[in-house]
Length: 329
Image 1 (cartoon, rainbow, N blue to C red):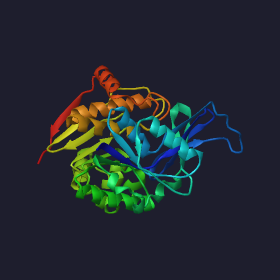
Image 2 (image 1 turned 180 degrees about the vertical axis):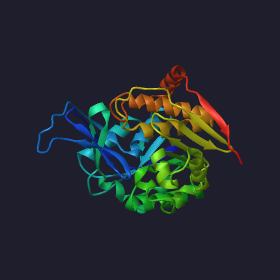
Image 3 (image 1 turned 90 degrees about the vertical axis):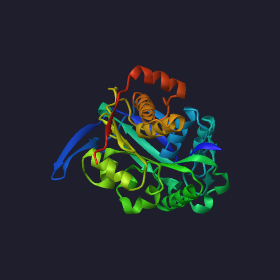
């Protein structure tokens, strides 16, 4: 029996660090947008280059495994050296693979880390969007939780079928939809949201899914879609969680950001770990913030993901404060 089976994308991530760039601010009636600019026709020198596995499915699988849970990853891998690289790294992290293999390339992302550590990500989804229902080894899906990350096209339709399977087999679902799915709206996601126990998303995604509103109204609206617990993060700003008749608010301690890649996955996986271990929202928030801050303080999405013992030790030093507020009827 697994504690969690993560379902999502798997990629090879290439972290390319350069200081040869400029930020340009564009102002239009819709607001301000920062654009990353490079000199046209030039050759850009890369200061540092690092290869790692990435994708929401594998990032969360590694985080949960390092936190001491029995974890499997369910996704689709292609052929060739990139898929082999992903496979070897997940096995090294003590993660069981329930993957299908098909003809095609593994996902691939290039993360440009530039001035003040602003990042731009180029992503090739590859075979990640081709997880078919016939690829799923249903007899092996013995787990307490599913963790669903964003998947598109055929893979999304398979997620919907897995959500029904979860409901039929009393498996809880944690769901992190990302911008890709949130912008499609509630009607597109209702088959999954209606069966979700824990919904984790950032403020931008929350507004895309539920419309712009106060955070408290966003939480109430998102919970009306079906999830029992909703967590909304906002980078270095306050994060909010709604559960039962309580709203929990926490301002993360300040941290120097080196690279934000994978921070959302680290928070979501660690928050889920806290729920599984103690079924305590305040503890889950502390675990999530601590592991996310470890990630943003270092380069790469997985390199500094903490073990459970390391997280507890670091959490004690951070002195995270959570405030509770009763929901007014």
